[in-house]
Amino acid sequence: MNATRRKPRGHDPAASPASEAEPAVNIVNLSDSEFAVLTALREIGYGQVEVVMHASQIVQITRSERVRVEEVRSRPR
Image 1 (spheres, helix red, strand yellow):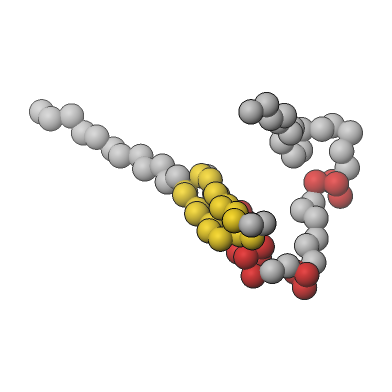
Image 2 (cartoon, rainbow, N blue to C red; image 1 turned 135 degrees about the vertical axis):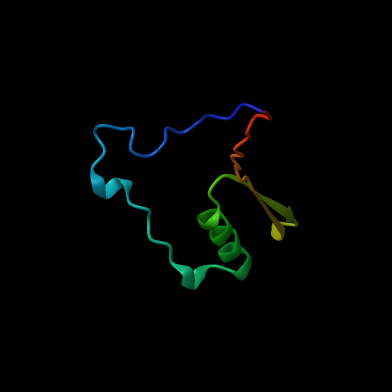
């Protein structure tokens, strides 16, 4: 699969601050499943959101979030 990567926000020096703001979403026209996908995307810090479709309908949303744990290890004396 050949996918093009988009540049992260804020890395275009010509971009104005207004263009960096998140676009408004008209939640009136969203289905419950579309709203659930947006909610999963906005709430996740690090990880992935998987959307499973069947017959052009969202049938499953899986969110996997990474949590980094830093453990302080003391050396035995």
